[in-house]
Amino acid sequence: MYEQDLKSNAPPMKTQEYRQDGIVNSDKLGRREDGRSGPRRCSTAKPLKGEATCKFSITIAWDEFGFYLKQNVGNPYHTGHPKFANQDLATPNGFLSTEDQEVIIHVHNACGGAAIGRNYILTKFGKFVPSVAIRSLQNEATLPQPEEGDNRKLPANDIEGLLRYFETEEDISFQVLWDVPAGSTNKTSNETQPLVDGSEDDGSGGHMLLSTTFDKDAAGNVTERETDHSTEPAMDELGREVSAAREDESIFCQDKIFLCIAWTNKEELRLFQKFPSLVYCDATSDTNKNKNHLITFSGRTTNGKQFIFLRVWVHNQKRVTFKWIFQAVLKSFLPSGTHEMVQLVLVDGDPQQMSEVRLALQQYLTSAMFTNCGFHLVTIGFKRAGIPKPDRDAMKTQYDALVSVLLHWMYSFMRPGYCENGDKYLISKTLLFHWLKSKDVATVLGVEGPANAPTGPHEGTNFGIKSHAARVMPSHTMVKAGKSLIFQSKLKVKEIRHEATRSMLNTPLWSGSATSKHVVKIAESILLQIAERVSLYQARRVAQGEWQVTHAPHGSQLPPGTNGTKKVPKFTRIRTVKLVNCHLECSCCHYESVGLPCVHQGAVIASHSKSEPWTGFGHHDVDLAWWTHLRMVNGHDSR
Image (cartoon, rainbow, N blue to C red):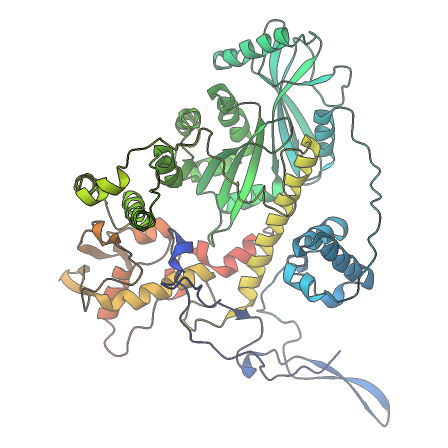
């Protein structure tokens, strides 16, 4: 009980030159010419004005009769305030016990990183404490390091221990692919048959390929079901490989061979249900000592946060393996209501993946289109081309400049605003080939020498699984690596939910527009950039409810940071904006693509703002996916 200060002590609104954001390649847009990073945008949870504070308060007062409670005028029910779950807020340092604070300080000092302490507190106490709060608890006192008291013993078989761990996790559902003796069951509680890790694949004669799925509902009830793949013609290749492996490695007929395992976290599946438009598929190796390849399926939130909702350990990356993933695993784990909501499936260019993705698009992902990752096609493709870098320093500078233009030109074929139809693509490609054959370019990029193409497949970091504080390593057992991956998934969900809560409660200090309190940071940044460019466009009314918008810059000077990319053709276009059912629709389809209004729509609105200047879009002009309040509601179960 206290008397609340009704004066606002929030810092004043700041006006600085902040970094630029965008849908495509947002990281590089924030870089300055001199290489320095732009000022950081900050926000505050405190009201910017004193009258915006809540007037309700209770004060302990006293008089000649004794103590009593004094209530100031206000709303005792606090209606209209944002509703949020306490577990999605960071735990304040003052709410931590002395023992918790000592543990945080000790773990941080012992391990040398605040992230280790954050992970430890989340594991042992179930509390989320940001790394910045952990750093604030540091002091000069040194605490003795306690001895590790973990005396738990893993099962003799690594795979069996992994399955037992998955069974104990309430939020984990998983599916396992085995080669088992014909007619036998494959329940994990049956320990009469030893588990053998199949380094190669499956077998059929006297054996069958069996998928065992363990689904867990919200109440913790487990539903177990089995699927026999032995009768599927597409799995014959896998059966023959396992038969050969049994014979070559002298595996007993009564033994069952472990092939693949897929698992998902129900919290991450909920995230996918909220952001189902995009699915990334990627593969990496060196995640456990059994040399299993890790296939990940991930999505993306509207503020650019990546999350993995499905992980699969496989023994190889052949087409028959991807067939099991896309036809059995992905189809069963994805909620049926999201199948038609997937708009794009992105893969890294593996031909085995692409063939099965096309088949999945025909069967259940009927609304999605499929494409390859531009980074793998352009950047990794250029590295595999093996064009060596010159040894002379003078040639190195010229080489870097030409490669920068070349890569930018290649990326222009897939970026908005460059080649939007086949004719413009052919024009740009012809100019690119002509430029490559020019004397200056051929002299630098056509240097004779041995090819330096990498011999191994591209290995991505898969969103930090190998550089995480709880990272996986090639020396880890499957149990230890599985625990690390599950912990990473839990932490990612916590961070996304915490950020959703924070973005709604805080007020931006770097923007005072009408949308700043209602949309996420990246959307607000893009809207401000659009509003600044409206003056460069001219809208001309050509019919009732129809306008033509053209680019009419005040000067021909290129914006800073183009770095020679003016060689890449960017075509001038006339956009058509129409008034349809009281809404403006533009031929550039910017709103249909990203859910944000375009500069052409802004030019039309600004041309009709005669009485007072146009100040920008409202949050009702933005798709709901960018709203902070909707992200907050979606952060919890809808009830």
